[in-house]
Image 1 (spheres, one colour):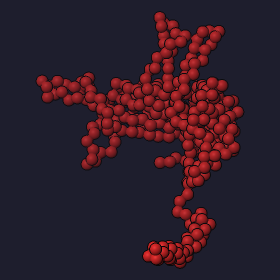
Image 2: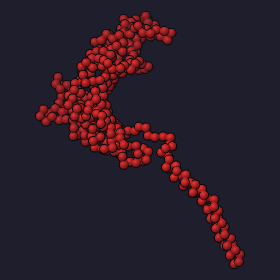
Image 3: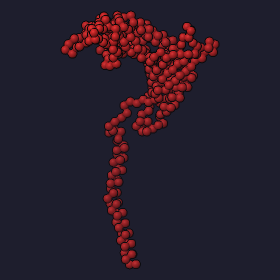
Image 4: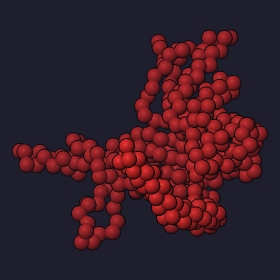
Length: 350
């Protein structure tokens, strides 16, 4: 009994001694920790090494198809688009503070695209993009810019028995009509329209000679060759003051696309091309002349090569120069030629 009491007393003494030891050693460290933590939190913003430089977010790859039915004529029209909407504004805290109260959910953005397509015309795409982008900066006070990209996939009405079919269509290829619409609060609306994926080829009427020749050159000069490219052409409209300004000029968007496409195809076909550079410049200056509201026209044309196949090793078959009939299409590498054509007086960036 005496031994048990002694052990119990020793145990309590150890318990208290450890408590005393804990407080003696760790209490000063706790005070220091809270002291420096408060200072760190107070001055962290002054000394931190990083800050959010730029941010935008939204919904991409929203596929939309709208059918317009004319009840009087029975003619139906389809428009298929892939839409991307990205928003900017007072959204920094969603990145730096995990504050979702400033986030318009990307699912809500997707729903807005469908509702806007139901309630408004989707052609021309420049107008639809302007309507959509304006909605976001007017609906949400903390959103100050909306960037809308629309890829319109071509469906062409079928001809059946020599007549356009009222409700049947064919997709002719990978060509798309694209627009980039940037609605900036307090500044206006910037629109860039484009043609992508228009693949063309001509079997003559193209040459390339007089280029730099040095110790690195193996390419032969030619005065007649196949010319093929995937046309990527875009044209920048002058800035619109707002949605009302876009609506005022809405009829000009389809006309500009038709003119740009027709000029591109006609110039490609008719020009006895000295080079891709020379031909694309002719295209650009004609488009600027046809559409006064444009600031610039830009082309990016990959040179898709078709090389003659030398068959002279087989019984002396002639298949080069004027005798060439069989060619080997090339996938890569390929030339890539770009240019931007602006109006006279603009400073060139060369």
